[in-house]
Image (tube, rainbow, N blue to C red):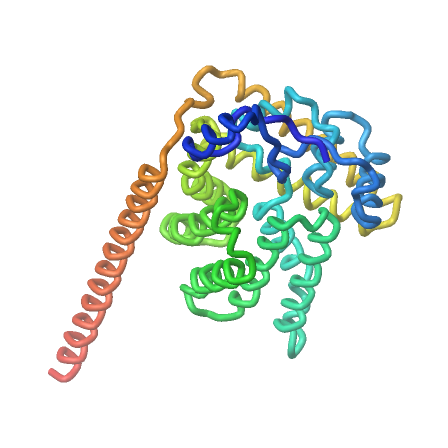
Length: 362
């Protein structure tokens, strides 16, 4: 595997100084976010097959690299300027298979498997199909530790969605995080794990509330604005961690992310469908994926050109804790206000019912 040498060897200043005193001048961290290239024999057969299928089906080199990275996890062909643009706008996670891609796969398979609910044990079969497809995608994308952890989390979330409880999602997220930390204690310091948990928490705490509060019907408008709210919530909740780890706050990412979610969803969906369909169907699907990837790349490159696209600021640990404490206080305040309004509406409804009964008795 190949990755760039980083001058900063540790986020802890004292330990970094100790390493320099011992003669070290740089370090390499091989993970999903800075991996540049791996030798072809490091890819297993299923991943290599998916990579070759997409490589043959997509014509433009830049968009082909984007589709390969988002579907199969192979990021060796991404040009440096494109990599920098995604990093500046805070959308680097789109190029590495992560929780976002897992969520897209879960949504796609849930939609395709919807007819199963018409059968008697349909909900159980649907869950089995979704979870099986999710873990197949894990193998296809390289089965890195961060992807496996995301798959564990989404598998538990999928099982929890059978429950009608409005808090089942948060319970499942907490349970998944507990299981992951029990099996891999080091995940507590893993950037991808923390970003995945914070993004899902933001969607559950803010995104779902915004959707319920502002959209009442099941029209196309609801679907469009749901994606916008989900993108904004995930971006806001990951912003402190991005500042802590990368030393910059991608301000423009708050506006670009909701748009990029549409193209990212299309790229992942079309890429997966192209891998499981015959060649005469896969070719046009990859053609549309090529167009979506080109559109997404142009959007990201254009957004990265603005001077204010990213503010160089690194939060320390205390600031990150304060920021998330403020998020939780805002969430608690909104929840208490919504509960008070609901109780007030129930009280007014009961008062109206009692007065109606009295009038009928008179």
